[in-house]
Length: 193
Image (spheres, rainbow, N blue to C red):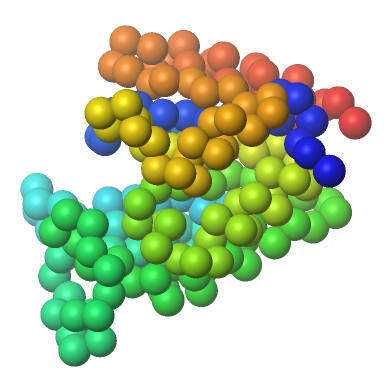
């Protein structure tokens, strides 16, 4: 079963443009207008020491947190973790929090996945879970990295090419308008049976 047209919303833009902030604000707006909304998923957040970014954590929508990646951990175990840039990715920590949040349940109204990117895709179980969400016909709001040199990550390309997927490109000039637009679209989609 393919997702219905218009139920996959993908936000992209350069690193640091505010994709996660946008997702969190959209979630807050939707929950304020519909407190009974059942939302599953997670977002990622920078871990900072002063002004230096030292890693990323996964945060579930009910507030549980776990490590996604770090450039400060140097245990014997972490030396075997895959790397993205200067960060080591803790795949086991990511999977323990993110994968349960992507289990399709009958009463879920919306999935939020921030982000479907290189770090997350080191988990061999992650993208199959994302595909199940896409096939569930439950609306999905996700962030994806911007295409580098015209080449998408294969999983990201598959999401962008999914029937009915809509891609919103965030920039410094359209952040507020984008929040209003996506909230309006999602509110409409969530009201339809």
